[in-house]
Length: 249
Image (tube, rainbow, N blue to C red; front, top):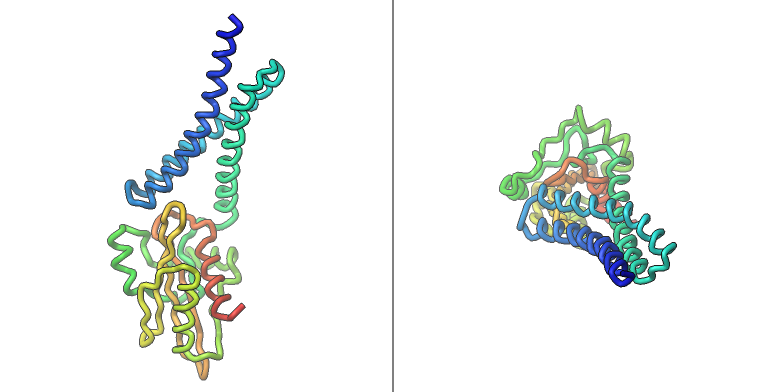
């Protein structure tokens, strides 16, 4: 009888551990499938939601199971439950950090140093259209005020270097950041590039516009996500990094 009871307890402990592993696998498979194009944005986030729900269930039941296995002196069951708890806490911690990032910034994905006359894309436009990406139009009335409040550091860069020098420098900076430079057009004062996220393979497009001003130049940068409503502040962060590179910070 005792052996049979022990087997039952071993089963529920293992079930919690397996549930946590399946939750983690859902996150990884969702990211990999989206990145490789097996499914789209919605499919990846559905698996993300499945993994998060599984982690929450494992955490809730796991706390109860761990206390039970501890009071009943069941070391094997306690170990399996503990593994499940550790995995679920890691998943929930990751999702909480993403949620906190999303709620700390406005739900926008189109950021520009010039909100009145944003830099325009050229070569990247057909790439976005082929993917059915977010529209490129910058709605100043809707976006500008929210952007200024959230990202006051996103401002044009005034440089004493010539426009030609800054065009070359912009291309080097973006390449150094790991962006794929799509086009360099010195005549138009424009550099276009694409940044791809590591896990899901989401693509954000960047355009740098350089205009001559006296002996120097004015640099504007724009970064736009192809999918999703909120960018978790990534576009503003990318623009700030590009501007810092151009300043030589």
